[in-house]
Image (cartoon, rainbow, N blue to C red; front, side, top):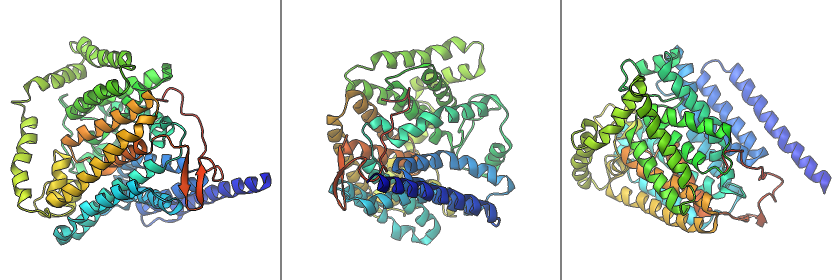
Amino acid sequence: MFSLIARRRRGEALTAIAALAASCLLAVVTSFSPQASLTLALLALTYGLYRADRRAGMCAMWMVWLLTPGIRRVLGLSGYLQADPLSIAPVLITVMIAGLEVSRVAIPPLARRVLLLVIAGWAIGIPAGAASASAMIYAFTSYCAAGAAYVIGYREPRRRLGELSLWRTLAVLAPLLALYGIAQNVLPLTSWDAHWLKSIDIVTFGSPIAGKYRVFSTLNAPGIFAPVMALALLGYLASRRAGVAAAFSALVVVFALALTFVRSSWFALAVAAVAYLLFSRGRGLRRVLLALAVCIGVPIVLSPVNQAASALVKRAGSFSSLGSDTSAQARLATPAQLIPESISLPLGHGDGSAGEAAKLTSAQNLRAPDNGYLSLVYQAGLVGFVLVIAALVIALVAAFRGARGIAPDERALMLGSIVFMVAVMFSGDHFIGVTGTIMWYLLGAAAAGQPEGHLTRRGFVRDGGDGGAESQAAAPRGFAP
């Protein structure tokens, strides 16, 4: 028996080593397109890691989501590709892992129902978007890939929710991404970041600080970077083992989040903090108050002598003048204009007519939607909107039910993070990309609760019973909820 286990372990290790060697060789010998070769290399490497250890493969998936945009900028110094295959690497990897999970286990009816509703909802927008096939395919695939993360979260092996791959990855990467973001503000931009801002028209990066930019780290925009930092901060607030390293990490994350100047993420984080206190029954009050004191007190104290702190105080003060704020009024005017138009088109304007996919078309579309729900109804119409929102409501109900049987601190972190994602959706299209993937993943993980085993096609087994693919390593110190 022991020899059989040892042989299987060696086989898994050899699979991972072979995948790594093949990916490195592929990246070296394929010179016609570094982006294409790196995409294939990442797919092969993630697959090898998944076969060796499922959770390691899932951590690799999150790393690809968080780091690939920055890698694209470095490779883009020699010129950006019109259709960069590296941009879809995270999408392909997410679909691959979800497919592997579906192929190895009997997916419960709940997860199937949520996934099918998401796919059906976005499929409504396919006919209207067919005129711009590339944009439609990109949008449909990306939105459905984010929904597929529900299966990944539902099926990820763990004994505690703090062992989930998302929290493990953020524990390591969040402070590093934050430091890079801070460097974008206090130091001159790197050549790849500067070249990217000149070459790609995505969003406004203008900062209240003259001559500076809103920080975006390795991600594509401040509006994407800010929610990631906010989720990492929630993880630190829920940590049981607060040490010097965790305190430093939380501090740099707060600093980076502040320098994004994304008020919507600040507001959604405040809502999530209240939800966290309610779900934890007040157990995290001291930490929340301490974080609040740091976030408010430090900028006020430094504002007379520091330009960034002064701009931050003014930006936060603009919450009191939202009635006359240009940005806030624009966010309110867009739904008032487009919702009646969308009602007259029950099948929508078509997938790819809003958000990032819209840059692949020449038509006048909703290029920068200020609301994820508005982007959904604009593209898929009322019919698609009802289907996707039905999936979201089912997932939310299942998440709250599944979280009943877990520890209060873990329940507070999971549900607080879900509340944050639902709230931040009002400020941007977060059904897509890393934020959409995170939202559906967290919903799936919360719905699964804290299972002691799972149903495979070979029968019911306990976690860790399939050859070590579900190792139960302890959560990182300082980031265990």
